[in-house]
Image (cartoon, rainbow, N blue to C red; front, side):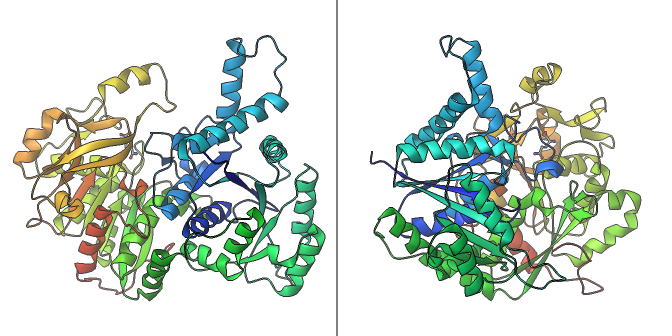
Length: 557
Ligand code: GLN
């Protein structure tokens, strides 16, 4: 295999300015030129994976096909590139340290003094090599989480520097920085970026390219200032202003010639033209005028006074992908399920939506509110899509109200109830007893068989599918016959027929009432929207807007 090139993406000034989207976009641009690019995410925290973190702490937990629970940026990479990435493309400080410490305890270092530099850095480079071996890229692009100057990512920057020493000419550093325009001053300031560059210099690393994030495009003067302070030509400062859609970012970078610049610095020649499919998708995205209004009902939406739609970023993006492909502009409201527990009369507000989606979740808070929403959607024939917990609670609702098992519930909330229609997986019982919670759910891709003539089969146009999971509970097999007798169809089941993967009502009963035990939102891209999301949004688009007010309720779009 030919030696790959490496691009390290680091952050300057502050976090949250779009390193992940930048990394995904650079990868996309280079793939558009015919190179195979493999993105790696490094998270500097000590958690071994993202699975045990509360989503309000860290945003969505993304799940790879392998079952690894990781950072939402891996979702961005997969969505931009339209393919699955392996476990090898993700690491945390926790993973790296755990490996080195376990190896030391097993005498793997043969009596040596084990130190952060060299042994931790060596392990980081070994992991990058393992990803290269697995994915065989022309270019490996590695995003180092956090901001330069933080203690916890310094070790990764040191590993990157070592990798550059061993591969001179094959490594580029890209710094994603931020240029504030303080309200009172009204002028775009370059100083924080200059300081961030100097901090990176103090690690022995010089940024080759600066991605300058700001509210508005950079003028020539700011570009010159940054270029001068960094000692690089002006064309290495790329303007990255705020834009409407993250999917515009690759095309926007190209306006400043980022693709050609990277190829020139690596001395590579483009192998093919451009992002043809991507540009076609963008035309649709920007052309969509007619609204489709969807309510996402769940929890984890708030932190202090702020709404956290990041917690369900894959759900949001999946809805967008499907809507754009159907020439619709998605308007999405986040509704806290507890609203309906406190005030059931508010359920009527749901009339104004074209569809309702309940995403995954854990624990008892807001559950009765969600169940009443599902009941409302079923009775009033509002398209309903339930993901994981949203499917389990759909089964609870059906058992209570259609099968007349009034005390039906999930063991997660009420384990001692008479009718436990959603129960714990047998192999999970032991783990819970041992308090072994990290990375131990049913995780990752599993196959399912679809029943002919069902909504699911019609959407997928396939009889076998593979989807990603993240849950401990399942439909209790003891209730399947009763639920089916009363009209619920299990249209997707595991190959051994034991696990119910999709539940639905037939089309003649309801325009769309379907829940999935898995997470389809982890397998979609803007150029290839997920078939179930398309089927759902299509049903939403068909629903006549019966809103009395004509206006969607206020909330974050
Ligand atoms: N809490 C449920 C379970 O563990 C659903 C999980 C989810 O929605 N991801 O089975």
